[in-house]
Image (tube, rainbow, N blue to C red; front, side, top):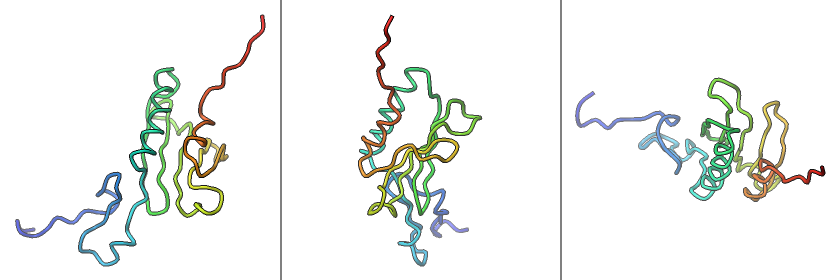
Length: 130
């Protein structure tokens, strides 16, 4: 590899949150990754921050692929995720782009509005009578 030769990155390792493309490769448009935008990520991290402050969650992971973007939430880093928040644009005209999935694969909530879908993760206040 010479100093003038460009560095080529793998589409899974290159990128960030805007969508990654390998420059100069054939079919670069087909290699575009699905990502969370700034507003989606801030809404997800707001819920995540409240749960971390409550001591329920401790770690997260973000997976980006050509089909969907997944934000996984963990109690401990060595365990399987407690919840997965998925963005699948292919389902935009059907059930909705966003979904919250339990560890067993059960879809807890799906819809077009991220804030409404994230509402399933919020604790509800219950009245306790003495």
